[in-house]
Length: 252
Image 1 (cartoon, rainbow, N blue to C red):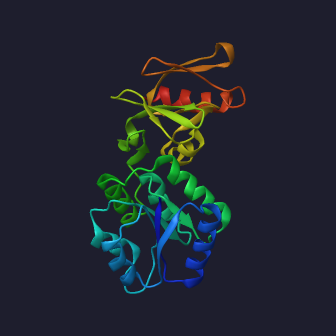
Image 2: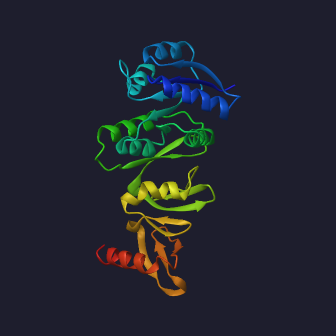
């Protein structure tokens, strides 16, 4: 039995969440609903859930402070929050679950889907990564949390050589490690790494240009990476990508 607790100071939000959870997952049990975070805190101390839906901005006690009091945490969390580009960026790089307000059936189904696919307790390193990015929102992320089969692996973005699609999964190839298979699509990874200069050169390939050693023009074009792999370049992107890479290689 999956036990759920909801904490949000806005009553209409807890009502919407309750109705949608009961509609989508009648097999899940909501053990507590609180509009007062202090009451929710006391309840969780004695009745830990499997999953907590937690608002961030609340009077008396915000969501982050509530969790700091409860540490170490042995349950999963889905934060509920109004849109804030910096907070969302921090959530995504640290692989911590979140749900955007206003809450709709579509986005709660997606939030549940993401949680059910991974169901891994948030690690201390993830929390640290999240807090660092949240409190330094304009600083570029240097690390990313990758959801693996056994938990989360924190890697330095600058050490990622390339990413290769594997259906709904992605293989991440790092400079000093073997490949890491993660439960994220290549599109999700592309959205995070494009700001770091990564290029989607093919439907199945995302590369770090810093690790390109050569360019082959024949057969539509391909790239030779420092790990000795040959990556195809899609015809639609070949001219633009080759111009970028040739300039980079010239000044290496």
